[in-house]
Length: 134
Image (cartoon, rainbow, N blue to C red; front, side, top):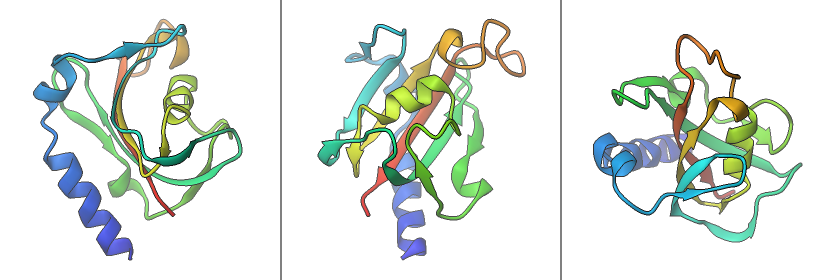
């Protein structure tokens, strides 16, 4: 099962070129400044604080498209609780826009990420996230 989920994620991620998905239309913006594009909303009810989920993400450099972190390379499949404080505020906000089986692109501004100074010289954080159905 883990192998199937891993292969599915790689196929999805590789079929979504950085330039096409990050530059084109249809971005929405929340009051906090989070920009997001829902690729697949998923099924069922939207995720809420306390929901236990399996999630994968790819963190990109917003300007170059370089992959900075790929959760599949860091860990196996783990359950995360939405709202547990493990993720930055903007990431949590983006998760709550999805349902199980959903995927989205997020552009997270400094005020809901790591602050004005950013992290490692980066201030805006770009992620592709997938929430697996259980």
